[in-house]
Image (cartoon, rainbow, N blue to C red; front, side):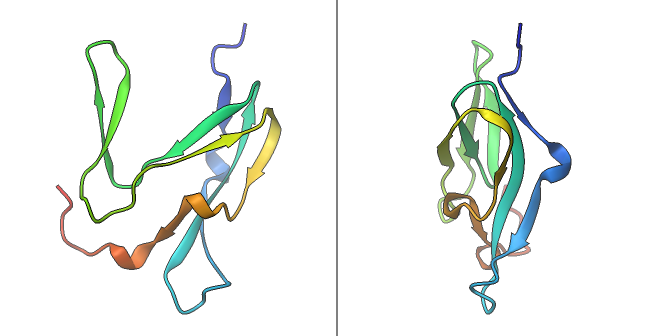
Length: 101
């Protein structure tokens, strides 16, 4: 029995500068994953995780000017690479040294 139907390869997770926009601070979140069935992968940037009474994690963006969650559908398969996915791009110029909380 498979307990976890999607696994991210932790060592594959990286932020890579978007070379098509060299004058901007745009980075892509790249990673490799395995999935035993079709799935949705969500990326929450600068979010706070809260677990509800049923034990289900919920995510809230902690600042209204920051990007909302990106959730993308992916197919099943082993060692699938996600590279340069537009929905998983991060503009680092939107972040300052000020605390977000």
